[in-house]
Image (cartoon, rainbow, N blue to C red):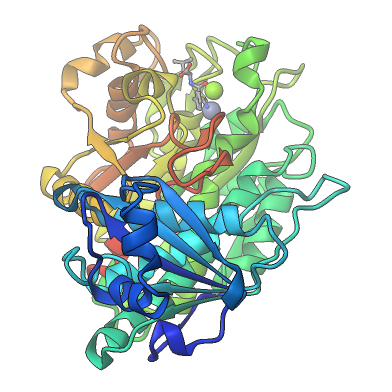
Length: 493
Ligand code: BES
Ligand code: MG
Ligand code: ZN
């Protein structure tokens, strides 16, 4: 779906549904909601608010049929004005769209630009949030269902009469359409079964959908590049590993950024096999890869003056006669040797080589995104993703940007002591140590494979895949990180 915007009054656009809003406690609505109220004989102020049917609490919505005009009015509860955020616009819009989409009469929907009046949100952000919410709200993964979810909403239009606000909002709609469809693309990839999605098919998907130049390297080529750590993880699978390198190169780039996504298409744990309940969702272990492919897809359309390289070391972590074993010592691409303590800590082993490969291109910054540790999930739950790295200033900046993008990141420590448990008697490092502080230990492990570049590591183990719907109504693959990374890249534009 593509959201549209028109420089017209909401009342002048032909529609089946109009969406307005109400802050909590407001008795007489102002702005466009007030205009709609007047046009509809005070039905909102006298009936809905006056008779206490709806108080504007967040995240409630009120659907008001107006049969004589063959229309519905949906009122979005924005909550208390002082607690208002742009994410709430997105989540509410997603909820409204999900509700409206169940009825085939709701073909054409128009919405006001929530929050751009007394809400104090800039029109561009507000429009981007509505657009992202509408496109998220329509998402479902029903590829393998014989009865598919109907898409009843044919058009979703934002109405804005003020010329200046309209011009700003238009940019938000354009960006929102690109980013939200890229996020849905990542969701499809994450939700796909590993039976169909393995390194080769993931690489082909990237080639067809990243929108940028994509090189795929096979096992022999990976061997030539001395990426033995990456190869070791994949050697137990019947599916060959693939190294994917996507590249967006504008004419005069202001910056050069490398993004690296963990691409384990299935993580059985290897010979240190996972218990069944932990293995169940491990097709999501390529969520980092899905994120970087989707970021490239968005970047290919936005075309910023920033050079972006995306790298995925894609393989499957399986137990078998050829699998890598506990006690194996591997010489990684950097020359640093790794003793395998636990074959289930495979992500960091593949990333060690992928990060080293990324650094060869001399980027100004490297960002990796990975479903790396159960420990991060234990620490931060499904709410926030972990962020670590070797440059606190960049981390601060990323966290601020991610807030504006409606995502949550929380910085975890990277003290050297976290690596104490990784000391090995026979190699430069072990890949795991104790159970305590596991997310930070993994972060410190990764930092050893980067020699000079400012680097950030995003641990999305807890946020990449959800058993229960989040505030946006998303279950399964989330597509977490894409919105923040795109916004971060655009900050250099
Ligand atoms: N892919 C997992 C991490 C993970 C856990 C992602 C839960 C999503 C949800 C990773 O490869 C892993 O298995 N990590 C181990 C490391 C341990 C053996 C040190 C873990 O966290 O249990
Ligand atoms: Mg694992
Ligand atoms: Zn894993």
